[in-house]
Image (tube, rainbow, N blue to C red; front, side, top):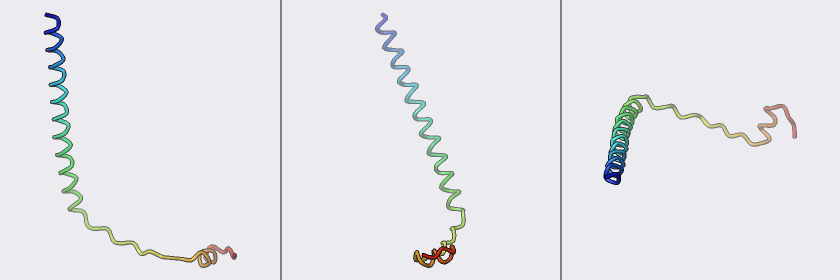
Length: 66
């Protein structure tokens, strides 16, 4: 009798764990879909202009002569 009750309790605990996992997964999917919609509506970011300086030019700008 005790083994039957213990086994049933373990089965219920496993089933509850699976339900919690299922609910969390569904919520995560909904949140992800909302995030995708928000990111699609955002305007694209402008590309930054890259400036390349050689070490000598950088030292001159900083006022440090090599």
